[in-house]
Amino acid sequence: MKRIGLIGGMSWESTAQYYRFLNQALRARLGGLHSAELLLRSLDFAPVEAWMRAGRWDAIAELLAAEARALAAGGAELVLLTANTMHKVAPAIEAAIEVPFLHIADPTAEAARAAGCSTIGLLATAYTMEQEFYVGRLSDRHGLEVLVPGADDRRRVHEIIFEELCRGVVDDGSRETYRRVIADLVARGAQGVVLGCTEIGLLVSDADSPVPLYDTARLHAEKAIELALAGESG
Image 1 (cartoon, helix red, strand yellow):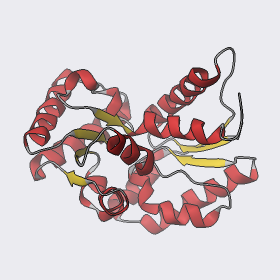
Image 2: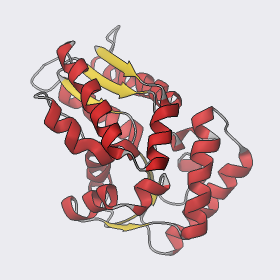
Image 3: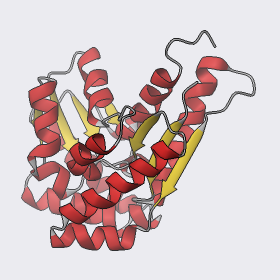
Image 4: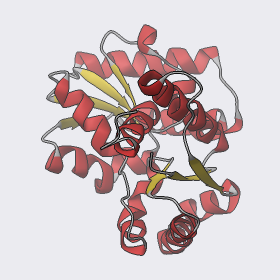
């Protein structure tokens, strides 16, 4: 089994979910007392978030590339970045290491395509919904049409992520907001909805949607375990 390295802490709420998802996925495959071999570099999110607001993506790229190198030096054989928005600097991370880097959008898109989706809705931070680095990968590499909420709803979805979910707050009123936004996306033609921020799965589940929800954190973790076990009989 390959050792998986995680760049986490952005926020730690979803990074904690990754630990559970990775070990659940491994147990589903191997059973018994098996657990995943993991290394974690957990960052202080506050200064990183300040850089995001200031547009200091160069500084974020330098930091995360250094963290990826540290993981590889520590024995990681596969690297994951546990935040969708931070994949804006994925090219810098990939260039910094010789071990594989698993981009979070790819297993998500593969799951949607396997389910027959050609049009998906996207809920995420404003950075992820509005910039090309993520939507473009889903459309250009995987052939998906991507729908995002209108401007007011994008702003509210973003606020709930940073002001509530990243701080461990799960609010019923915010769940109703997300349900309404999901319904709007479905009315516009979304056949499934990508939870394109790894915290969103803390707030909504398939019970809150008339179409399948694609939880990027869970799908990312499951694909990582598949790759970690590739070539092994268990």
